[in-house]
Length: 125
Image (tube, rainbow, N blue to C red; front, side):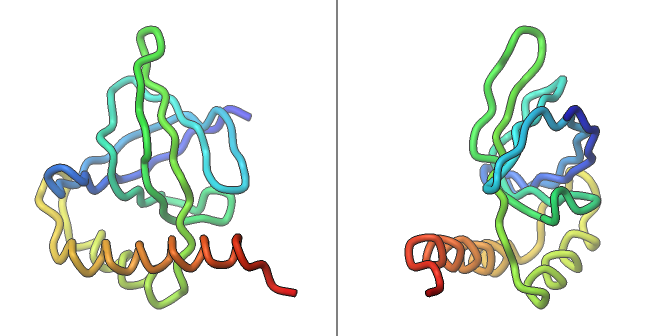
């Protein structure tokens, strides 16, 4: 199952972009568990390449495990227009610079999360 993956994170705390190389340890329908050498702050995840059909998510937790860190990432499904919007925003920022237009990005991602929750609570007949 171990697979290397490169991702960017837009920190919830300071809206700064950071890049990380992670090892995927496990997966589920809703997300993945990863391991890194350094702590990753919770935030919006942008996968450099699709991971199990997903391009983005939220880092929801990170904890120290020995000399490494384990983290949980929840996938977020975006429609094509919102994914393209986020991709353009991500391409504009350089590592460790503040993210531009965070309110609109977060609003679109929250819409995607709410849509996913509605579909899981009220599955199609």
